Length: 328
Image (cartoon, rainbow, N blue to C red; front, side, top):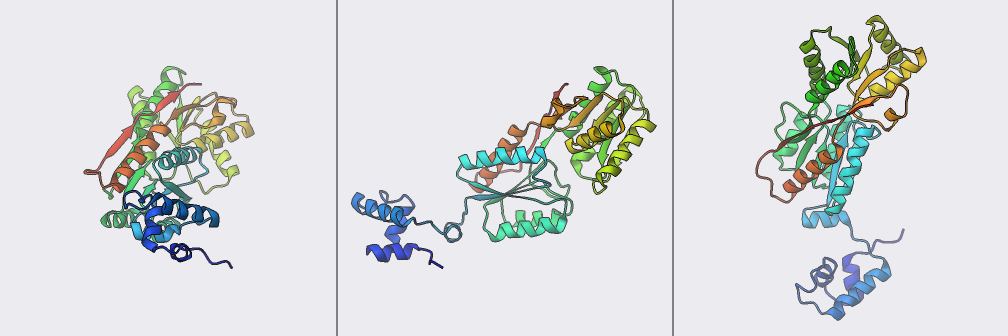
């Protein structure tokens, strides 16, 4: 295997000091009063041999890897994929690269990924935390590692958070079904998760239903069930409760709902999903959406994290961003 070229090799081959080569490669030639001729000689040689710096060694030397770890529940979920895309672009514009992974609601997997990123000397974490991560995230904070949580907070972790108005978003979506769609029996489909954003969406639905004195009709779906079992449970929930409208707590539950409607030919037209999906405008029945402001969430996440990395963060920020209702 061909030996990786080092700064020492370049210095020896050109007959100059390692320090001089390092200053030139790090853009400090003028600051250190290195001649233009020598600077050009080193730069031309580096280009000729296609030298690539050892990023790990550089991060150990400078204390910064110029990389950020992004951990989410499932990167294939449209919400997290869009968030990751915006964060990656904004971070890149500021000189940082993103390394992202899916935790799949697996506590042990999440802990291993966080440790892996720590071993790689990343400069900060952006995390949509799964349950059971309080201890490891608090450990990062104690070590002064920059951390921003988004999508859902952890009750026993005091750090920077960027959240959507989950309760108000679900309230607005439910009131839309009540007032605009004239629905009389509105069901709420959520998961068995106890995550705070799911609790907030349930509370928003309950607040709207309580306001008008209707029956609370809630179905909690275990995500580990098969597609057929989920479809059957949704069909029974809609039929048994004679629903004329459904609010889904997530976009993937709304997709499950559409599958059930098609499979069992359910006659229901009033559907709202928390979170958008590009298919919702194309399917029949169309699905209205409580859309989270993904670009603003990403912008706030990157701003707060870079502020920590650059030592400019003086107090914990908790940012809450309104959602938009997309009517269809």
